[in-house]
Length: 96
Image (tube, rainbow, N blue to C red):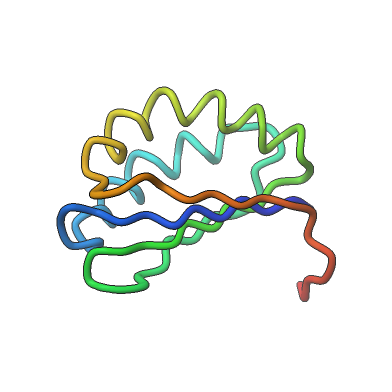
Protein backbone atom coordinates (compact mmCIF):
# COMPACT_ATOMS: atom_id res chain seq x y z
CA UNK A 1 0.00 0.00 0.00
CA UNK A 2 1.11 3.58 -0.71
CA UNK A 3 0.08 6.78 1.11
CA UNK A 4 0.00 10.39 -0.06
CA UNK A 5 -0.37 13.08 2.62
CA UNK A 6 -1.16 16.70 1.73
CA UNK A 7 -1.13 19.52 4.26
CA UNK A 8 -3.48 22.26 3.06
CA UNK A 9 -3.79 25.83 4.40
CA UNK A 10 -7.07 27.30 3.19
CA UNK A 11 -8.16 30.92 2.89
CA UNK A 12 -11.51 29.93 4.46
CA UNK A 13 -12.72 27.35 7.00
CA UNK A 14 -11.69 23.80 6.15
CA UNK A 15 -15.24 22.66 6.89
CA UNK A 16 -16.47 24.46 3.75
CA UNK A 17 -14.78 21.83 1.57
CA UNK A 18 -16.46 18.81 3.16
CA UNK A 19 -19.58 18.65 0.97
CA UNK A 20 -17.86 19.21 -2.38
CA UNK A 21 -15.17 16.66 -1.63
CA UNK A 22 -17.69 14.08 -0.46
CA UNK A 23 -20.16 14.55 -3.32
CA UNK A 24 -17.83 15.36 -6.23
CA UNK A 25 -14.19 14.62 -5.42
CA UNK A 26 -14.63 11.23 -3.77
CA UNK A 27 -16.60 9.66 -6.64
CA UNK A 28 -13.87 10.75 -9.08
CA UNK A 29 -11.12 9.32 -6.89
CA UNK A 30 -13.05 6.10 -6.33
CA UNK A 31 -13.01 5.48 -10.11
CA UNK A 32 -9.20 5.56 -10.21
CA UNK A 33 -7.49 2.20 -10.55
CA UNK A 34 -5.72 1.28 -7.32
CA UNK A 35 -7.56 3.79 -5.12
CA UNK A 36 -8.11 2.45 -1.57
CA UNK A 37 -9.25 5.25 0.75
CA UNK A 38 -9.38 8.99 1.43
CA UNK A 39 -9.48 11.07 4.61
CA UNK A 40 -9.86 14.81 5.14
CA UNK A 41 -8.68 15.71 8.64
CA UNK A 42 -9.44 19.12 10.13
CA UNK A 43 -6.13 20.17 11.68
CA UNK A 44 -7.21 23.73 12.50
CA UNK A 45 -10.04 26.04 11.48
CA UNK A 46 -8.33 26.87 8.16
CA UNK A 47 -6.09 23.81 7.76
CA UNK A 48 -6.70 20.30 6.55
CA UNK A 49 -4.68 17.15 6.09
CA UNK A 50 -5.62 14.93 3.17
CA UNK A 51 -4.58 11.28 3.39
CA UNK A 52 -4.96 9.16 0.26
CA UNK A 53 -4.28 5.43 0.23
CA UNK A 54 -3.43 3.59 -2.98
CA UNK A 55 -2.49 0.05 -3.94
CA UNK A 56 0.98 1.16 -5.04
CA UNK A 57 3.08 4.15 -6.14
CA UNK A 58 2.10 3.74 -9.80
CA UNK A 59 -1.60 3.95 -8.90
CA UNK A 60 -0.97 7.05 -6.77
CA UNK A 61 0.91 8.72 -9.60
CA UNK A 62 -1.79 7.91 -12.16
CA UNK A 63 -4.50 9.09 -9.74
CA UNK A 64 -2.67 12.36 -9.11
CA UNK A 65 -2.36 12.97 -12.85
CA UNK A 66 -6.08 12.35 -13.35
CA UNK A 67 -7.37 14.20 -10.26
CA UNK A 68 -4.80 16.93 -9.57
CA UNK A 69 -4.90 19.00 -12.76
CA UNK A 70 -8.68 18.63 -13.03
CA UNK A 71 -11.00 18.61 -10.00
CA UNK A 72 -8.37 19.46 -7.35
CA UNK A 73 -6.97 22.29 -9.46
CA UNK A 74 -10.44 23.80 -9.91
CA UNK A 75 -12.00 23.24 -6.47
CA UNK A 76 -9.10 23.36 -4.00
CA UNK A 77 -6.03 25.15 -5.40
CA UNK A 78 -7.75 28.56 -5.80
CA UNK A 79 -8.62 28.53 -2.08
CA UNK A 80 -5.17 27.79 -0.68
CA UNK A 81 -3.61 30.51 1.48
CA UNK A 82 -0.14 28.99 1.04
CA UNK A 83 1.44 26.24 -1.07
CA UNK A 84 0.43 22.70 -0.20
CA UNK A 85 2.99 20.41 1.36
CA UNK A 86 2.97 16.84 0.11
CA UNK A 87 4.62 13.68 1.37
CA UNK A 88 4.27 10.19 -0.03
CA UNK A 89 5.65 6.75 0.56
CA UNK A 90 5.11 3.04 1.04
CA UNK A 91 2.97 2.06 4.02
CA UNK A 92 5.09 -0.22 6.18
CA UNK A 93 2.54 -1.09 8.87
CA UNK A 94 -1.25 -1.08 8.72
CA UNK A 95 -4.07 -2.63 10.71
CA UNK A 96 -7.02 -3.75 8.65
